Figure 1 (cartoon, one colour):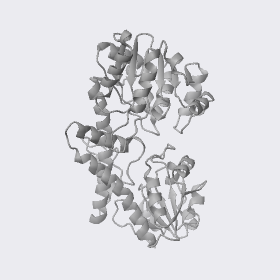
Figure 2 (figure 1 turned 60 degrees about the vertical axis):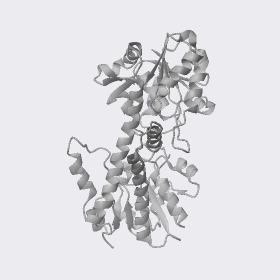
Figure 3 (figure 1 turned 90 degrees about the horizontal axis):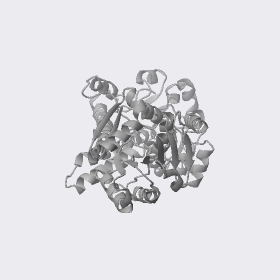
Figure 4 (figure 1 turned 30 degrees about the vertical axis):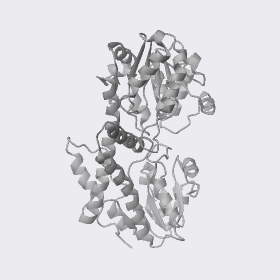
Length: 440
């Protein structure tokens, strides 16, 4: 099928590349000329495991190309995905300005039967509004255009794998024709066993927000539990392992630490709460989830402060700057939130991340960025694990102790074993663990 993907951010680029990989002829469109120029040279604008190589393969195979001109790209396209950003306004409401502009820019170029796919995460009712816009803009094609909702469920760091082997494909549509077109589009994935779920458009839109909110809820529950475990003399990791053994609960997203970050969870939680309020329902649980997430960063900050007493003239090393491993995304990163708190208290903060150093420096100019974990730890009075990259799990602890000015570790992701840290002579602060001052 001929497919156009409007927007080449994290969702759009992964969508374009993986749709080409399952056999479609795809054009990725973006009004950012610099980004398109880089994509045409085979350069991904962000790090995502497996994406760069697959993009090069699809471009070389002739099934993927990129353009800044929407007119030529859209003509003759059977399916048009919209993957533009929906950032939060000051009120928390999702801004849909970019989405409306994108749809209006495409409408004049539509030339025949086409399915318009809303891929961006949006409030329930948005697809219906897009349908109204297209009906007004192109009354001549009112019987040939379908609007469907197809929310993405991609995890940064595993997005390519999630797109090629999804747990489910959710489609909300108005008519059998919309469902049938999407079945044809995803036929290779459906044939391999992926579940295809059909709903109305509003349900599909709402389900996406509900999924992200519930995952954020699990993370915040684990972090609130960590605060209780520290006071009760219990171990949060062992506690959530017990919880996760119950199939009704599941172990995923129950790791205590600095909390969630990234572009999706924070803004989607706000947008979902705003939608509920607009519909006349107060949803205080969502506010509490966000509050507990902020509390997780503050709790880690307090451990650093407890360990170092006065933060002035102290050097703190942060291992990990991205909001999660296997991505260079630092948007709403808990590591940068912690770095900001430490800088404001007078500490010198140096961070290292395998991929996100440049982005972190751009976001927080006062942060020093090291080229390696060793360089970050050298002469630091405290080391904080902020992102659970595999590289940090295999640190040479004896070397780390020799590099640090003081052998103090605040483990914001519980990647180290407390007993081992005690035996190696570290002052160890875990997360949700009773004896966080383990040794001298």
